[in-house]
Length: 337
Image (cartoon, rainbow, N blue to C red; front, side, top):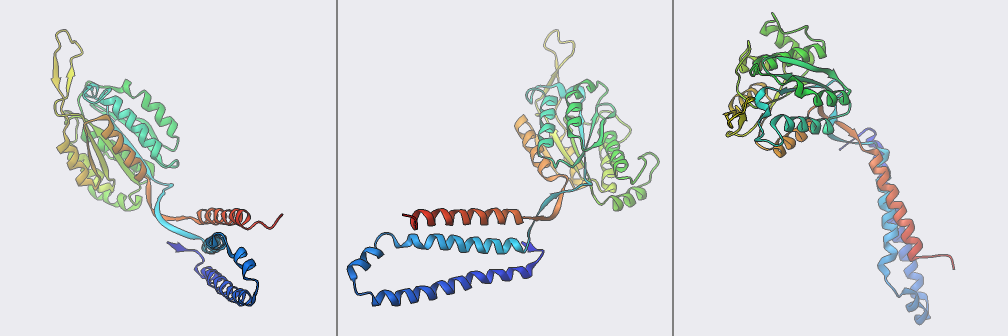
């Protein structure tokens, strides 16, 4: 904990001073009590529960100490939302996402997980949404209007494609969108690795990519690790989620006899992407696990280590202590007949 005005902590000296004055007053009171000759009356006055009379003053002193700390404007080190941060959500909408080994379907579980992410994300976080199958499509450019992202997410099923899974191209498009959002580049085409490294220094790691897919690369100009290299050079960590089970199968669109084909996820590739870019890998075989992963990411992405003022918390605590001291004093030591 740190303080904006640490010298004001000297006000805490009021507490030991008050305790010293109280002890002095107690000694004087005991001296008068010894001189009291009517022992029967003295016993009646001293009866009851003597500890009660100490509780209100202790609460009062705690309140004074808490107020003294509040005067110094305390801060704690925590994760605070960044006004400039951007998270680019990249969701696989290829045909295999219609498999139902993750309920209700892989795509349905992904949509629910993204909503969970938005529930936990900072309100001022800029969020973009990219849907991809054989090629990436920007559904929503970076925006602080999270409701717009939710609306686009509801319609993302219309992007379902039969043209394969272009993981590398989707990563490159996310990097390009991040560069445009931070004003550090016009696009990815024709740029050299030196360009991306220079751009990374300018954007300061304010862009993160959250990538969800269920299958292996089957189409695209760039291989997955080539797209990951662009994200790495740009300084964008990629958090990957491999959705699906090894035994997942997809029924044919022309299901006349129960024909289906296997559609296992490719966790090895997605794990490599996360490792190369400095992100994190999650393997989600159930709707609950993908929900948990997105909730965790929503609570961390878009936030950076910083200082958060807790003065109001100390003031509220002091008010509660003062209120408690007043109530107990009135109940246990009433002065009115």
